[in-house]
Image (cartoon, rainbow, N blue to C red; front, top):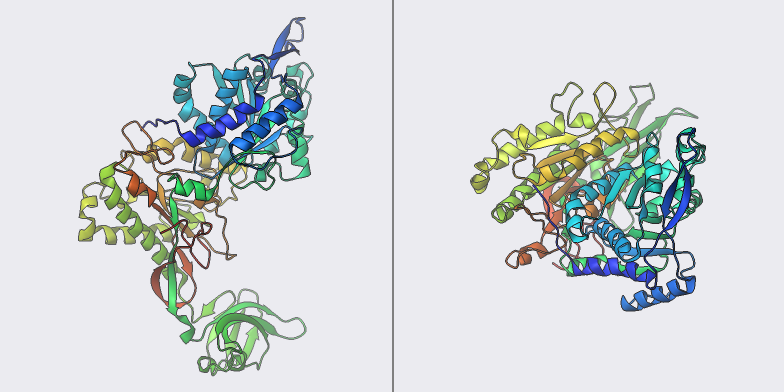
Length: 600
């Protein structure tokens, strides 16, 4: 599958906001001497850098013109040469700053650009975006030479070429690669004539583009690192700026939704009905310091008669009937004994029942809940396929898990989540309702789902945190497979990945996200939801970008939803619900309420 792109007015406005900052600038470059790396040679190369020939006052005046045009507050001065562009996630932020690079070169001759990113995932996503858009921008700008590369401390020759080339040079680099004095980029190198790679970069006065600044220069040390690049200016692109410095352009979530640029978010909940009608006890901890005691969680009635889950510290002889507000369900639940023996910790009650450490009685089996989530995701996925297959849209679903072993064991056999998935998928696909899909997709269920996980040196799958070198192979695989996943030639429709994969991977055809992780907090990171709000891509050598679809399809796309199945612990019997629409911010899995984004 090959992607093509259309010119969008809102993206053009964002590009022009930056380009117009330098109105009055001549199209020129600066030069500087670069010592040849061959020590025996007396010859020198000439470096090519950016140069600004208009005054700070002129830049400030240009900034005010841009801000007035975009109905934004006027800021006092552009002296810091830092500027913010605010664009809702999923509206083509990377595309916009890539086009900005070409426009700045076309109009002013600027050639040196550095894109600073916070993580491996975003770095790979940016690099992939340059690959995908290379032909598109080549046609727009007369195939002007442009080299883009990921900084690698083992290939400092790339930095030398960055400094000496007269063509457009784009370096993509992680903030962690240069914010410490001990980083190789800051060390003198014989291959660079005793100079540092940072010295070469500084002489070019690069235009620095920060992707997600709230995660890049969020510490004093990181801010110093950005300043150490000696940038001509810093362009900050994000949907959620912590610091809004000289805002030039803004596309809010409401703007994006009203313009039909992103998917709507809807949260589908599995909740348990009538769960307070049985005795629930969870053993949180035990201790024998200063006497035996335990920490238990029960369903207790408060003074107003409302039943809520509450934790109590108990000791032998305490009666849960009294602690619960005299609820009849807890009659007989007197603490008879507390065992603190390692690996055998438990509490015994007067009615002979026992509860082990970390376990609960009177609670719903966790696997029943997870299976209900998986089933709901598959069902929603299949319903989407019935609606969109004839329009040429491939539907994908993404499952986030916290432990690889739950999907695939070390020996390659299926884990419990894979088994649940295949059972639910086969059961649903056998329904007459989905007969049209049975002939379209392979009968072999193992081909419709797969997982992307990091591996150790022995090739064994492992859990990761998402910010280590071990995650590189995961991100690389996913980003390389992006176009393949969008193609109907690829049978894969359901993707399992580690919960660490929370940003950077933003396949536009993901319609469902299911989080099968152990929730330690009521709120989860919303990033994966927002990254997947992009409108889907169509085959036939074209892409639906930012709401630009054929007139006959557009009404359906405006109401498209990104479904987030999650669980709300309310009792025993599982029931499906969809939260009512709220005219506020979008919500994601793990929230106790599940508002949908935008009007219903």
